[in-house]
Amino acid sequence: MDGNQGPDEAPAAAGTVTVAEVARAMAAVRPARDSAGLISQLRELEDLKSVAAASQARIAVELDLRQRREQSDDGMPAADLGTGVAAQIALARRESPAKGSRLLGLAKALVTEMPHTLAALETGQVNEWRATLLVRETACLSPEDRAAVDEELAPDTGTFDGAGDRRIIAAARAAAYRRDPRTVTQRASHAATERHVSLRPAPDTMCYLTALLPVSAGVAMHAALTRHADTLRSAGDPRNRGQLMADALVERTTGTPGGITGIEIQLVLTDRTLLHGDSEPARLPGYGIVPAGWARQLLTGAGNPAEASGGSKGSDTGADTASRQALNVWLRRLYTAPGTGELTAMDSRARIFPPGLRRFIQVRDNTCRTPYCDAPIRHLDHIIPWHHGGQTTHTNGAGLCEACNHIKETPGWTVRPGPGPRHAIEVTTPTGHSYRSTAPPLPGTMLAGPPPVRIDVTATEARNHRRKLRHHAKTLRRARLAVLPSA
Picture 1 (cartoon, rainbow, N blue to C red):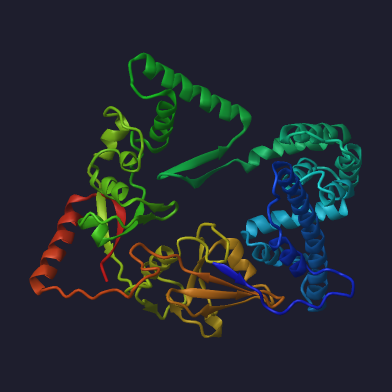
Picture 2 (picture 1 turned 135 degrees about the vertical axis):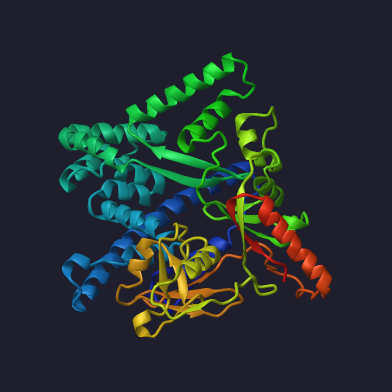
């Protein structure tokens, strides 16, 4: 995904320096010749990053004001003013729409309510992250109380010289509580309503399963897992405490030792990887790229898949036993264009994407197709709206998160299919700036190099190949599998 500048920037006023000129000057900077000079350069560049962050905050607030005036002049209801501004900021800064909303909120707080923190950012006394901490810890206060805390702490006077994140957070929380203890207490009570569980990838076919819980529940869970692990260790279990706690969490959540349940797990890989031991990696939707050996071991149940990716080896634990259990596998063949990896066409006259086409687009897009947005797909959207003649096809369909689907309906936003070897869309914002999104390459896609070589096979070889696929469909059981045949 990449962003392309739209209209040219307006010429700068006489005597001013444009951002492009600053960028060119920065590109000309070379490392100093001595260690002291190098350290000085690092500090000066860090201060420059803070200055840039402060300028971005002022620009974001100015953009929000102008867009609101323009939307009001166009007759947009007052309750909807400002829609899409955060998304434009996110695209310009190559961030997700969710991050764009946080950046706009940070900018408004700094510019309108916390002038001392903004001044500290402009002078390099704090960086953008620590300014974010001060804004976050005073978010529950009224504008007046927040401004008073900002003046009390006054980081631009050197209040936090040498202070780390924890000290800054503690000082901001204490000052906020002194100003408005009731609101701070209510905020703590409300926090329990924001409990949730999230999943994000980790290296080596691992992942982080994170739970935001009330402290009492979190401490109780940790204590129970620790007690369970200590009991098994005392009984001679060779796994360490961390492994035992993790395995117990999986077993108590899914009801099975290895965590393999009736929940659908999709795995996209080539037939060469499945049948011929090829090293082309597979893709696990919701996680990302996984090694070929790991994918094969997951499907065949031949030992712990973690061992195929460098995981620890040990005795035959409960998790290993579960991974050797027979798995239900459905083979769904997805044919791709040679070299480009573009999936073959599907068509439907229905306004709603039928189930087969929905799965097709979800496999192709993997995550939300808005540039820089990695949120899960929640909506299947017509790129050219159905009421404007857009067809319900895979070329006119795109997977989007809920927020991005609503934003693209805001006046001034346009989305259209774009050229490219794989499915591409172009997003144009109300300011005329365009951004491009290309579907991620599927396993087996040739991203560079010579054109693919056609290999002719006999009818007997083709029958044998199909017989192997049917054999594996019968013997591999219990995870949803998408196989991409060779071009």
